[in-house]
Amino acid sequence: MNSKLFLPIESVNFKIANIYLNHPLKLANENYSSSKTVFVSIKANGFEGIGEGAPDKEVTDEDANSVSRFVEKLAPILTGKNAFDIQGINDLMDNLSKKDNTAKAGIDIALYDLIGRILKRRTVSFLGGKGNSKPISMTIGIEDGRLSVKHAKIYKHLGFKVIKLKVGLDVDEDLRRLKEIREAVGNAIKIVADANQGYTLKEAQFFLSKAEALNLAFLEQPVKFSDFYSLKRLKAGSKIPIMADESVKNIEDFRRLADINAVSMINIKLMKMGGITKAIQIAKEAMSKNIGVMVGCMEETRVGIAAGMHFTLSINDMGFADLDSHLSHSNKFVSSGIKTINGKNIIGNGYGLGLRLKKDFRF
Image 1 (tube, helix red, strand yellow):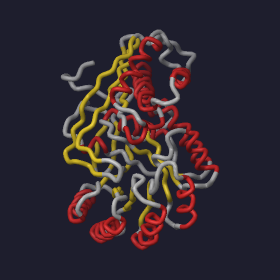
Image 2: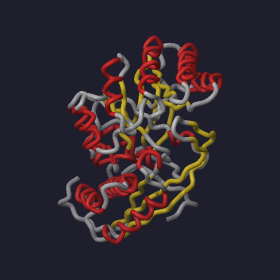
Image 3: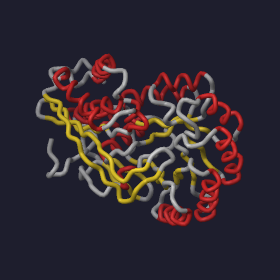
Image 4: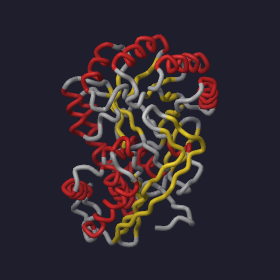
């Protein structure tokens, strides 16, 4: 962003909100039916940018209270700073804390939305991207096999071309569910699996050996986030690509994995990386090393998902987009900015992220 333009930040505010899921989601490392997120507002010269920090304690060791404390601490420091100096503000946040990436993401996203509104341009446009849509995957949690097949058929009917199957608690049951879903949806649908750190090395090796015949597109985070050695072993021993998620929380993690050739792909989430600025840096470096990139999400509302979409469309040859969390929410906070049709997320034409907060939501 061109920091030669100057517009002082007037205020930074936040609000904690409860998110309720239509159905509980069971993963290998956590189960939940609700969560909390933190919305961020940054104002300058009569314009307001909206961001979101949606924490996941299991991934970044943050919760809504810690995100709020960081934003509250940062607010007086940012007042008067140049809204256009996003890199400088990112550096300032990093000097303040080496952690708090979800909180940083909320600030970073709000700045991109704010600047787009000021410049009367979509965020993706001034990021150098183009287009307005991207196919996304739909997630099936760890659940009864019959229910998994039912959901898979529904998602296929709705136009989704990628199904993400949560695994990691029982390798035999996981393989049964994968086989049943493959038989139900055919080979035109891509199926990916995410173990959320649930397997041992031997379990992951067994799963991969059987999954090859079922045309699995990749296996995400099969082992504990710190077990880079096992990731490397799995990558070397299977034709199925291995993706890191929880193992990659920042660019230093990525470089460690890349240096030992441990993975074929990484999952970039704005919430764990610290926002759009850092996500772009990591994505470009990964692609320069022929490591594939998927854009993922925590439990963001349409605010965070819209930011993820603008980031996705700013990167040429972006791989998978796992940006579906907003579709499972029973309560909504914004009325525009993104919609999902025929298996694709579509961003709007509004300035910035194109978001409009509902009238009953106020900071």
